[in-house]
Length: 286
Image (cartoon, helix red, strand yellow):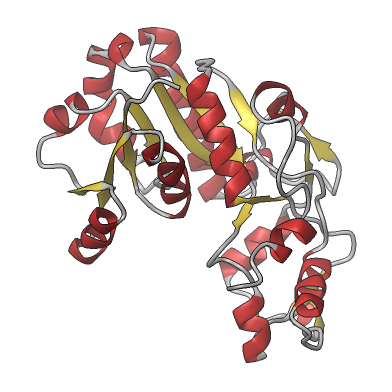
């Protein structure tokens, strides 16, 4: 792809993975952070840091032609949208690509049934409802101003530095069991590849689920991770007896299998990590 300049709002785990792909192809990457310590780490990795909130929104936007937003909505909505929408609308057609990282939580609970991008959103908690509102805001910039927005609905993200191995070794992992419960996942390497594919062939206004092929019960994933490192499986605990935070209980309230056929048709036909088994095995050095 022709190299450009990517501005990432909230330069975290996913933005870092995408940036590594782009930097090796000659891209310039600008990433926002709230921390001066993190800013130095970004600089060491080849990313130009900018502190958030931005001192000069227009000047920062003028330096880029691609935008990735991964920050969660706050009480007043998506902070990136609130800060930047007016400026982006003014010069919408100058931009080559924009991606908003949303969540599969927007679908709500489907009792373990399959959902795809045509499934109506039905969020069951305020955080997911705020994501729906954020998606709609970014997509309105496309329909009303021609700003090339794309929405990526993400499940649980894992990969190097984000595995259960350390918790298993420490004895702090628990296999929480809820009958029939499954979750979808995606390895950060496949997620970054999907984003890069979208950048290569923009399709503004599109929505994609980015997930692997095998939704699975969380206790199965932990059990497999334990076997990989030769550790005893963490104890199984019924969800009724689990000491979960309110957010954790919210997480278990939604149960669905997320389909990825549109992703495979449009973005990446072959996942490097089609299930948690291949993905966890690739992270054994964690």
